[in-house]
Image (cartoon, rainbow, N blue to C red):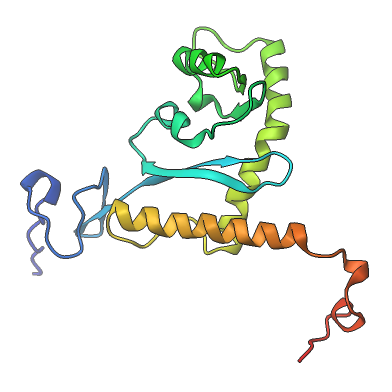
Length: 197
């Protein structure tokens, strides 16, 4: 009869970090018989509406609530500008801060169990989603064309670096797309897919 190996001790609870484990983890999963710790992070980005370029970003642990990060992501912008965001960024404190900076809040409304959104609020959220979807295009490009969502690093510092490089690469790719000449001005060989030496 085969015996099971003893369970490994949770590194965060014991206080000893060894080898390829991290003490910054906030979620662990049981993978077969071995305890594997994983670090969950969020990429918060500030994307400009006309060009979809990433202007500012910050990477946090997944346990950090989104509304705590909004100030870090907002750039000093001219008064009267709109701020579009997901409903996770909405709070009365955030609304007051935006009003103090003379920014117009276009943050999605939240619905609650006892007080669902009215039809008018749902219509406003739909209109806001058309603009906010431009940020989701950034994340969609990073998932499909830049290696997916999985970051294979140990520690928050390395994850920040890798996500920062992904954001920078996306911005370079987007800038090249925006500054490229129209296809009708390309040389004849490149239009047909022929390679130039």
